[in-house]
Length: 382
Image (cartoon, rainbow, N blue to C red; front, side, top):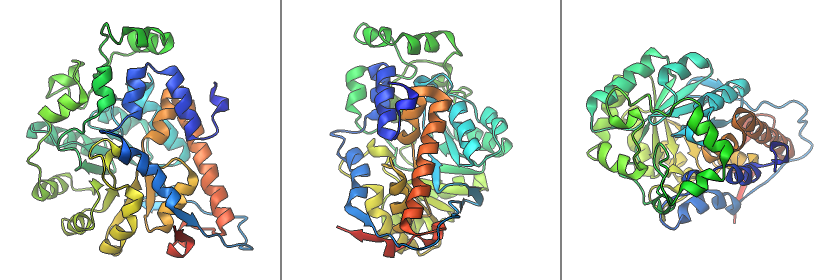
């Protein structure tokens, strides 16, 4: 299978599975417990049907939106995700350049494999930083100050990862960051020589946003669950979030809000946006899908805060359904991670191009010329 054979996100997933050692693929693809929530994230979109208009004069359409004060050419954010150079040697650089080429928001994680400073200098398109609150307050302060100096446009505080979900695929494979070659996993790496050679002989693995404060930044192999369960601050509260917003001073988003009550609290502390998200089903299995919660949350905040539907997006029509349900835009991680793993920057660009075409085609077939014409009258729920 080649990149030219990829015509949707599912195709990129198949190509990524061919090219990655199975512990690495399972880290991207896997989720918590029985993975019910991960499956539901995408399946939820099947429970709503689009209602098109015709004869609407759709020769010229505008797919752009303004999110967190900056224009995006599509109503789609490339969500911040960790460890990207493990999946492909180009890592966050490839995703950032692809996002800039298409005029999209993208983000990097506290656990990024490229530094805040490099991404800040690399692209001028809108970028967010996903902040994990660590027990080490000096580390939290350092990352915020580095984002300020690098002129990041927003911080997304992750609020759904106080402890790690039980990611059983990673437990079975022994996946660590960086990958550790063990007798049980050695064959899975050896039979993917292209990945192994890139990993061994290109730039040394690091987590440069952490390396001034914790040993994990130096390339010491740790499990992700172990890292989260020992390094992150389980005492985080709404007061913590408000303090971080004040310290940051810029556009501020809470990533991982799933209830109407929490959405209202986000408004009260002065957040600019919320990402309705369950971390790709990687935390609390059995929880609701973001798309299932959008209408309730949109009603609760009543336009006082931007609402981003994060998770499960695999098609342009999923984006249109999220917008019709009331979201200001959609976002996702696996939708570009599969493409990154499959083919680096060309893969990410092809994935975005396919989604762009699907969004544009879908809007024309819906009989709308602007994103703001998508509303609840365009959906019927089964």
